[in-house]
Length: 296
Image 1 (tube, rainbow, N blue to C red):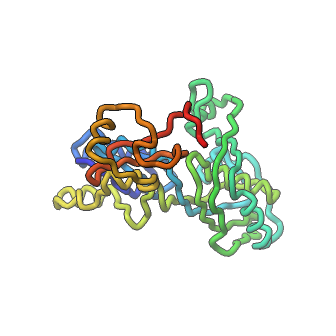
Image 2: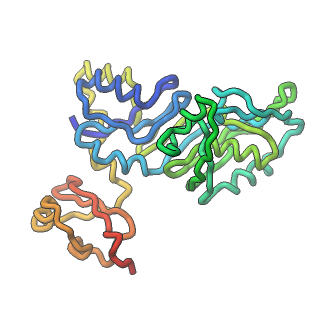
Image 3: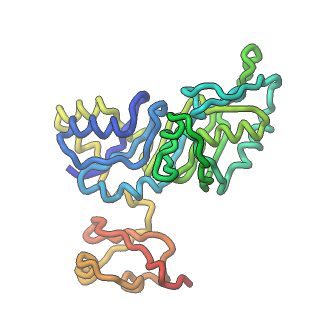
């Protein structure tokens, strides 16, 4: 069985848990996922089955869409609501919509982030969450992230009694973005400690919430013999790349692993991004420019 599965990951499970359960339900081992989701986050988890595991990296690189909530008033060790409080400051005023919107707008484009200590980023061969669990300190690397859109999607709620202020948001971002950190940094710009109090991923790897099915539905469809009707073809994993259809002659060269000039594919210039090569309506290879070639 080969194909892409838009899985709806429920809260309380890791991405690895989902893969483990799918192997049992589908009775197959060759399964991988294209983009980790924290246990406290639900949403779209792209799953690759069989030959489709070859496009995992391209799913992971694709943009993602999240909907969530930012709460000002305290920050936590994990930068979300599951961590221990590390700093608090009463929000003693109703921050205007305009001030919040302008602050969020300032994050659009390429930004730098320092990954949270409770993350899987490796430093000196050890993951940050391992340092955090051992109460060890380490210098975290600064990483770049791309924010396409970051908007408030609800009214601002000010809880005067608790000294908290919150609002919901939607963000469209690139690979490696820590939405928890984005929430914390937004609070800092507004002058308050903050955390991400809720998060759902509504799109990932070209797959949307409306397409996703749960583990229970996967099991039900397997029993009914209709599961494969819910799979997307491997080609969906490279839909964001330019498509080039190749001839029989070129296919012979591609399948033999020959190093080919971009002009073989009738391209006017060296491509700056990957090209999806199709033969008889099936994706057969991803063409990448040789980094040693000069790009005009």
